Image (cartoon, rainbow, N blue to C red; front, side, top):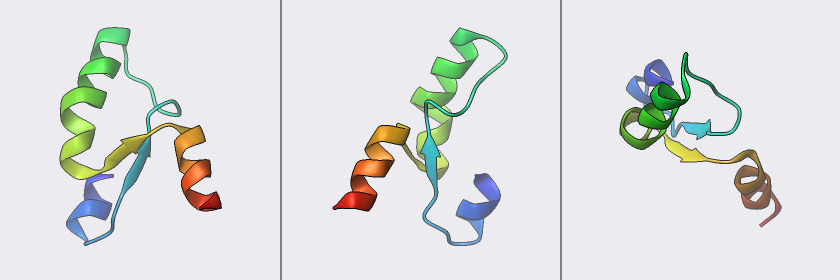
Length: 52
């Protein structure tokens, strides 16, 4: 994700398709880390974006 961002890509992170080593770590990454380098969304939200 970060490499894509650093190379100028508009990165999307599918929040329900990634994991952390604990629930707390996963939630922390979704809240603080992923938004710095990508646009977090669920797989359903991503599919809806493709349909529109």
